Image 1: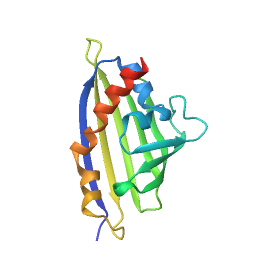
Image 2: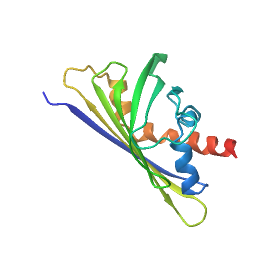
Image 3: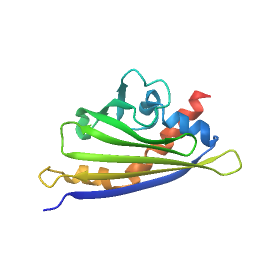
Length: 156
């Protein structure tokens, strides 16, 4: 049986400039403010935008309130345009996630934010229906947008 790969994406507009939105998203201390499953981020570089090659550990709240850690490697960061991470450890599971954010300024002071996630699950890793829905649902991915809008407004 081959590995299972799921793709999900979401997009929406926020009323801030692309450079500011991208820097906010690339700063791990902000992740719990806008991502519904992020509980905390640990590490010495969490208060500034991460750079390509940086690593950070995130505490994630799973289904049913279970908590686990994900280790993230920044695979790309083009300030104001792209920010991408890949998991190098995901709660001891045979699951790898790659998340890419792209930022496109609309010319009116707002920015189109796109978030794409690819999840690859080893064939021997059990994956329940709720997890499959969470990893593969564009609706689940879009849940970060209201949080991002509110967190940016609160940071002003």
